[in-house]
Length: 116
Image (cartoon, rainbow, N blue to C red; front, side):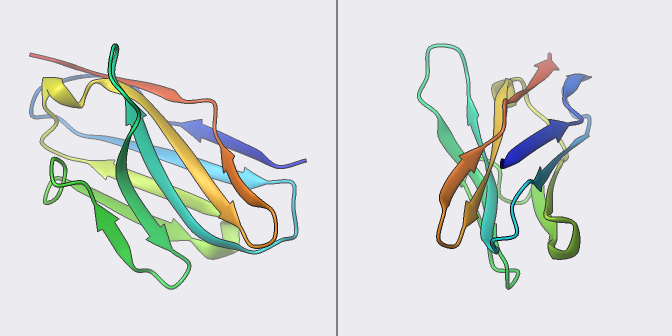
């Protein structure tokens, strides 16, 4: 059974940094894309960053230049390094993995809170 386990969220002051990780397990199918979405209270879930198996990346305009997504294909793990955090980055961050032949799977979410 596919599982995505996130870690690394928490509370940080504005201008600080956090790194969140997401490890996928439970399937031998290939992951060809992983990424992060976030959802703030009262708002829709939005794309933060995605990375393909080949290393291509895409970022939301609001985080470009501050966040960096990276992946370890051998470990089926994706990372999101978040620098210069702002209060508006406060949200629950969800990771996902797209398995070829299976579809998308989601993590349980990790809270990131940025205080001003």
